[in-house]
Image (cartoon, one colour):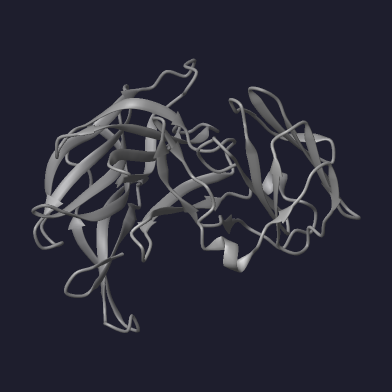
Length: 315
């Protein structure tokens, strides 16, 4: 949502014959957000047939008005993000492909062939792109970031990296908090085949994370305001917990820490270059993490979310 002369929300209206190629539509709200004029079409699909997908707008103010980025894929090539510009939020001109990359399934960092939920923003003086990469018709989902140069129309990545690990955290949305800090929340996908028996949940939202660029990498610690809501308990070794209630722990990233209650045991093991998390003996995270220094984690019902001291992203 953006605030101009009135609150305005942009979203995707999927095509009935191809849900991946949608219209970009908006809704105009009253000042108190109680009433809305909905489904005003502002971009009637992708500008060319070579784009196989088209969805998930992000709008921000720019030097000459407004800029929108939209996720897409290029047929027989790979993922891409398109850029549009407007002076009034209603008439949008296509500036072209902001950034694209070839789909290489065997690459160390597989960028997929469709990019969803693009987030393009400035973090600590650096242009950062966040994408939710997928493979059309496949079972591949991964959050990836890039840091690079931007000339107003084209973004040229200099660094690519993982934003978190695994395929549960997805579709990250960014915003700027009241103090001007770039911040982010992710959707936690809860897959039907992995749901615990009798689970009342069907996905969740992550804790708010702050975004920073440090030594050429994107970092995402928990937002500082979490301290007032959920103070951290310092721990080492093994500690009793209650996974049914929200609890937060901090620890030096050394050896192994263990949290347990009557139903579950969670272990986090640190090495010089990796971090591994097991729940009741099953490995749920096994990720590269060079020289981790600390761990900040929250357990809440069926969710465990943590950040290692010098690792970007959400686990």
